Image (tube, rainbow, N blue to C red; front, side):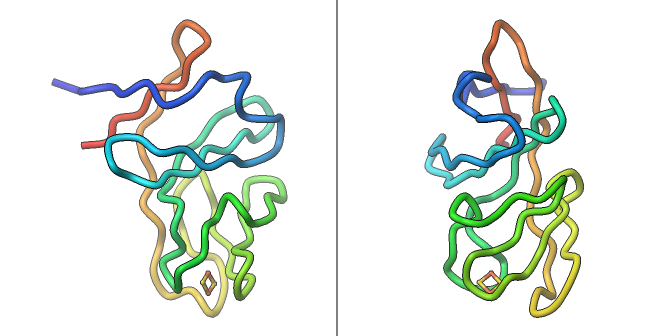
Length: 103
Ligand code: FES
């Protein structure tokens, strides 16, 4: 059975922007891209930088430290210096809240 965790209100995530949230001991990034929401780990796979401090352009988040870019929909690492994709989480919107499957 899927276990869903309420992590934020949809209103908490500004349109076409990113925020950081903590849930279940995880540091997570939530994105709003053209009215859709996505969730990934917040800590870059390359170094200790928080993606919520980065710059979201379309569906790509640019890491603030060395400008690596991930596609937030798939978690795919798009360019150097990244070599590892970032983990994404299944997400649903219900009752104005954002729910993630964190397990
Ligand atoms: Fe993110 Fe280096 S820490 S690209």
